[in-house]
Image (cartoon, rainbow, N blue to C red; front, side, top):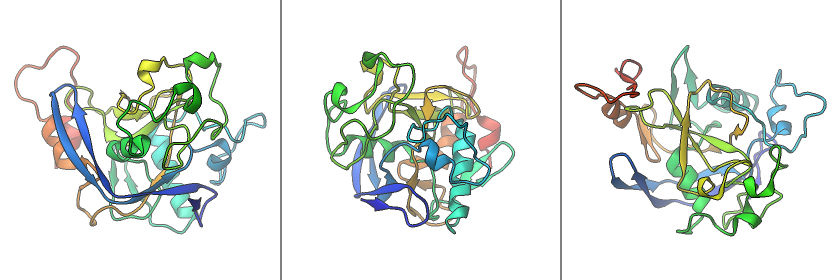
Length: 262
């Protein structure tokens, strides 16, 4: 464990390993091999958010509270700005309605879902790494908002608040076939019941959605070759294939076809 030499963010090195990812809709399981990477010891706080020029906070903001609400677009933009402040190559190329990830960059970024779940589980195979009362702020605490980070017990990797406090944005699309541009959220929040506060639970929302119980945690580390289009359980090709549905669509499905085509 140590402080990032560029920003006042404590990052923890996560070892290489593998994790099984389950797809409830297709009823499939796949094994994902992960390279070593770094991830924030806590969710990004108001104090860390304000390290970036122009990211001012209200005078009454609690500096060690996780920054919230944060949209997915705001999170990836902050990551790029933090990389620039630290003299790092930005991880993302951000266009008007599309974001691409250079998997060879050492810049700040959002974790993939596989990275997030591997880090959250920290070697356990249980829904959480301990009793929720000890490790997570949830609905059982009857709170009106998130609490300062790091007050609950850490997991075996030394990570705090992976479960509870605020939901965390990940890089991946939630499901390009059914939910279009929605991005994934993991971890549960301060107002969620126990069944939502588990390492396996996933939620999705629009990348521009303003949700009171949503924040983010940064990752860092080159995890592939430049222009690879795949890393750490994520694949641009898989996103395209999943969105390329043929024939009549079920009611409410909005495949992300146009944005993902080459």
